[in-house]
Image (cartoon, rainbow, N blue to C red):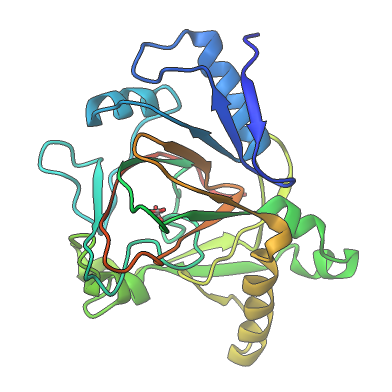
Length: 278
Ligand code: SIN
């Protein structure tokens, strides 16, 4: 199998892949090697890429069908492509808080691929947190308590009329009337490719644990939300124009920092369809 040149960026997740030009057609062996590295490191970074939307989509399709966001308009040319622009005077950015993408869907996206188009001179980094490591760090007693628990997820607080994301100028939202729909996922999911268990709740979209009283559910979820994103489980990526990040939504949460007031940031995002968490 093709050997990739990988440079880890923290002890728990994240690696830069060197020596690959994503604008060129990739051999099957190279795609296989990227997929193995992706499942092992959870988030991969490629620097100095020159990619238009079609080339980014062609790369994404090597890992599965592309998804369309149910509540955010894609570009006119490509509904699967999100153009995420934060202007210098915007109060809110897109993705500014710990979350896993679209867990409010019955089959949330497997992964997301984000390309840096216009990057602030300082700030605008993205944080990632390894949810396998967060699970592994729990006591055996807590692990057995969480097994079998089911959490409810919804996009309501973000995408219903007046929701946080509808107030962000970084994106154009749609289908607000459908956003309160609820889906259920296990609190602990098993990764379908590496077999590892990981926490699968996030502050943006997980609303409660089924079968518990409200205060019981809040206490457990607040503990898990905080536990899951401790510094020891994270890495931080410094963007440049032409950087690309590809993360595994089955094993990481992420957070787009908004610490670049007065500067512009533009990203292009696509997502790969996933399966039902088990
Ligand atoms: C996202 O949450 O998909 C956006 C991440 C970022 O802009 O860094």
